[in-house]
Image 1 (cartoon, rainbow, N blue to C red):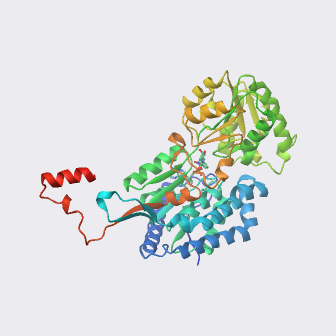
Image 2: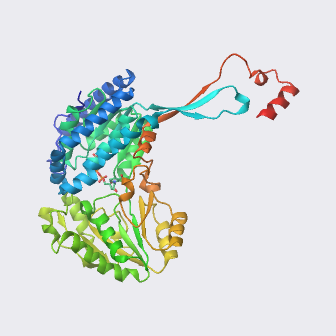
Amino acid sequence: MSASTETTPGTTASAESAPAPTDATSAAATSAAATVAAATVARLGAAFTAGRTKPVAWRKAQLRALRRLLVEQEDVFAAALHTDLGKHAAEAYTTEIGFTVSEIDHTLRHLDRWLRPSRVPVPLALQPARARTVREPLGTVLVISPWNYPLQLALAPLVGAIAAGNCVVVKPSELAPATSAALAHWLPRTLDPQAVAVVEGGVPETTALLEQRFDHVFYTGNGTVARIVMTAAARHLTPVTLELGGKSPAVVEPGTDLATAARRIAWGKFMNAGQTCVAPDYVLAIGGSATAIEAHLTAAVREMYGTDPKESPDYGRIVNERHFDRLTALLGDGRIVTGGDHDRAERYLAPTVLADVDPEAPVMREEIFGPVLPIVSVPDLDAAIAFITARDKPLALYAFTASARTKHRLTTETSSGALSFGVPNAHLTVPGLPFGGVGESGIGAYHGAHTIDTFSHTKAVLDKPLPADTLRLAYPPFTPLKSRILRRFL
Ligand code: NAD
């Protein structure tokens, strides 16, 4: 059994490098995309209605096949990730391929328990009766994924959507064309084509898909497109999960182990050349820690990537020229402590730390999403909390502190998708933790059991036997006696 790749004639994988289309070719592409989208959704919808995806055995077989694919073709996917983002094979494994294999293993291990109906107590007035909740799949769901972790962010939602019993259309990012092509090649040879489809392409193809009625849309990417997705979904009253980004601060307090804190911040920031949604966006240094952390960050970068990170096989590249130009324009927003070197031809931008950054500078206004790490100083914890709460709720908040009181205050006085002490990025590898944002950083969450929640409807089931009609007291005509008894029981 194998899933299908839907191709729109005339689609080029790399939107950025494609020549500008004429009106006639773009109208033809739009119409072809609409045809593909409608046919794909119709085919998957028919499979869902026929009950193809409901048996748990089918779901597990799909997950095992996907696992096998990732293990057997690890080199192929690692090569694609290297082509798109210069990812080292070790990083490709830990953050994408192996990550997805772990998600599959965790799901296979717990799926039966997650799917088990759950008993709910019934109030006395309704006795005898039994109540339970039953999970049911939603139908056909759309997964739209971005370019920065183009394998993980397409496949981790796919795993949960299949496990919950849905048909799935996966739309990989056109900005990671090698990974998109690899998914489009291999998923059809691995998964059930009646139930899982890959649609490649960019804006026209995604727009055409969003015209269709899905039962859920799961989007990972930026907030601007998220609004387009949510508007399109609203037309069909389709629920959405929006996994977005934002500026995730790393609070650093004096009195903590700054050398280790700097190493961990540098690790979280500069993996995938800073193109990680949960990467520390900036350091919020309290009191005297600002000056001290500068030196430690410089040392940490050198330790990880050597004196010339351009030569390091462990350091990635910026996804395209547009992002490269956006990032290099930020380099003047502070004093360069380390880094700053760049080479447009290679889309290389060194791991860069900026100090003495004005909180109003452009680098502090938008999510950076690249290897530029500003340090902003605040005098004390009150000021740090005020700084965080005056801005959009972040996807993640990190703090490096030895103080239990600081931890308590950050937990209770700030809001963020996740809060992590002592380590950035790692919370999303804890399968029991929900992964998602709040406010501008997103709607909904997933990973492990939370993915099953996202892709299921929890149906309320009540079963009251007909004999012994205990509800007679509730039927009209009402009498004072019936009312008294009813009030007592309710
Ligand atoms: P992107 O450009 O690859 O876009 C994401 C998807 O949206 C792609 O599949 C693309 O084809 C589609 N798309 C783009 N424009 C569209 C349009 N006009 N209409 C319909 N669909 C459209 O990725 P991106 O948005 O640059 O991703 C980076 C952002 O994603 C950052 O803000 C980052 O923080 C966020 N992100 C969040 C998470 C998370 O899990 N919360 C993970 C990764 C990235």
